[in-house]
Length: 158
Image (cartoon, rainbow, N blue to C red):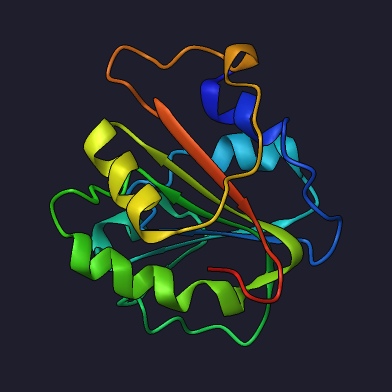
C-alpha cells in the first residue's frame, strides 16, 4: 500500500457526494490510489498546465482560484503544492477551497518539506484531523507525502 493510500484509509470520508478534487494535480499521480479507494466516484484533477491532458485522465485545465465547479466534493486534495515557493498564491487558493468541500468532507494536504507544512499550519489556524502517523506507510525515497495534514469540513472552515 502506498503512503497516499494509507492516508486515505484513515479518513472518515462521507459517502456523498461521490467526488474528489485534486487541486494543482500536476501529473495526477494519485488518480490510481483514488480509484482503488473509491472506484465508483468521479475523481477530478485541476491544474493550469495543459501537459497533463496528454495522460488522458479526468483533468480540467484552469487557473485556481477560479474553480469552474457548481458542486461539492467529499475530498479536496492539495498534494505537493510547493507552498514555500509561492505562499501568497496558495493562500488565495486556500481561501477559495472551503465552499467546495461538502459537510463532513475533508481537505487533505501533503507536502515534501517542513517549510511547506509550516505554511499550512501558519495559515489554517485550526486543529488538524488526528491521523495515526505511525501507521502510515513510509514516504518513498523522494519524500512524497512526508508531511500530512487533514482538515474536516464544518461551517466556518478556517
